[in-house]
Amino acid sequence: MKVCTVVVLMGIFMNGATARLHMNQVMTGCEWDDETDEIRGFYQMAFDAEDFLWFDWDTLTFVAAKSQAFAVKLQWQRRGIPVYVKNEVTHLCADYLKKFVRFGEKAVKRKELPLVWFLQKSSSSPVTCLATGFYPDRAMLFWAKDGEELEEDVGEILPNHDGTFQSSVSLDLSSFPTEDWGRYSCVFQLSGVKDDLITKLDPGLIRSNVIHTLMGFFTSSTQVPNFPEFVFVEVVNGLTVYHYDSKTRRAEPKQEWMNRLTEEDPEYWEKNTQDDIGEEQVNKGNTEIVRLRLNKTEGLHIWQAMAGCEWDDETDEIRGYNQYAFDGEDFISLDWATQTWVAAKSEAFVTKLRWEKSGEAARAKHELIHRCGENLKKYVRLGEKTLKRKELPLVWFLQKSSSSPVTCLATGFYPDRAMLFWAKDGEELLEDVGEILPNHDGTFQSSVSLDLSSVPTEDWGRYSCVFQLSGVKDDLITKLDPGLIRSNEKKLNSSIIIVAVLSALGLVVAAAVGIVLYRRFHNNNVL
Image 1: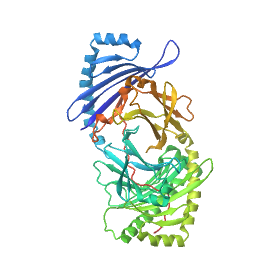
Image 2: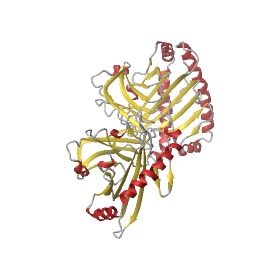
Image 3: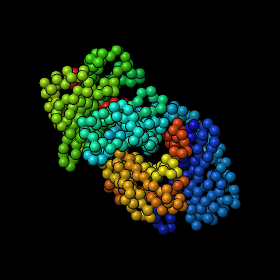
Image 4: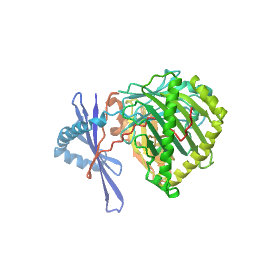
């Protein structure tokens, strides 16, 4: 079953006689089940972020949320506005929705794999696996140990601000020695995609409170349809800034401010292009070497390399990491603490011995601390305006079922110095403060849950979700409205939700299409 939704959001800003800023909001739309052809609609009005009047679809009557709205309710009821609203929703809105679904069929049926992150607040906190940026929402995320699924937690599917989805699962590993953590992996399954996306837990790659990161990713592949044989990208704080592939054979900036690198070195992009052409050949050679060592037949294979650094701009500490994988399985990696190479497969042992004999670990450490660290500091300086920008989030209310806690999700904000919490009658509740997690596009998200099962629904309006962003004076306060809670009871796991936004300025359709497969930083080691 597919349930499709069109949401029309209109905001009218006006200065009244009191010389204050006021906002009148109207939200109306429809849901369409393309199996039963059932249409349901909704219509709500608010003034200065407080409910004013809303339409009860089941009884076809208007409900006045404030005494001042009662006159409007009576007038609209006498004029037959409920019948008009139902007719508009079931015909005009539904016709547009079906048309949008037909026009956007290619986008609706696309498959986007997520970025996967490991996160941990502190050394004693659970480890969270976050998969973000996938589409559609027919997916599962869970932990596995030695390849066997753990039943402790299955990630809830939540919406991102750009129409993709995200999910997270947490696992308490405080009682297990760190050397055993490699037995655990995070498994992502997407409907319509045959192979699972399995990410092995590596303590060295768990993100904590480090402020700035530069990650470089190489992917060398053979016989992958519609994909370059070689791709290299650099990512700063989750934002892609640099790209090279074997089709364009050009190093290119992915952020406007990266063009300023030529102010210091006019030949910067040409020099890097030549470096990347050389690295392309090295990585293609490594792909063939590992294929032969593992006795793999010719065909579709993928060699991945990831390297990068983290910089704490308060302590000036820099840490690095360097990993290699073949066909999605670990091959060899650098242990930063011991400065030794760890062979994940017996076939990688000869590489481990060769690199340790030649002092490759010391060279890699020097490269990551100096070259990577210097590049990261330079990128942060050049992109200061972007990296120091302030972006407020979209806020959603979510609930698995009528007996489940209500979750407030704030997604799409930047930077990550923020707080999210529940309040009652304007007073902060200390039950939960949301953890900050990264989105796939460089923004962040957070969520907090509140159990309201013992609170009468008519009292839910006393609760609000409060978002505070560092550097922004005013809090973003979203009042809890039961009518706006998104619930999984309204759709099966196989449902597709389409959200379109209409305004007086015309139709705006935003599609964020980008499957990030594999990534890494400059390192042209020969195996």
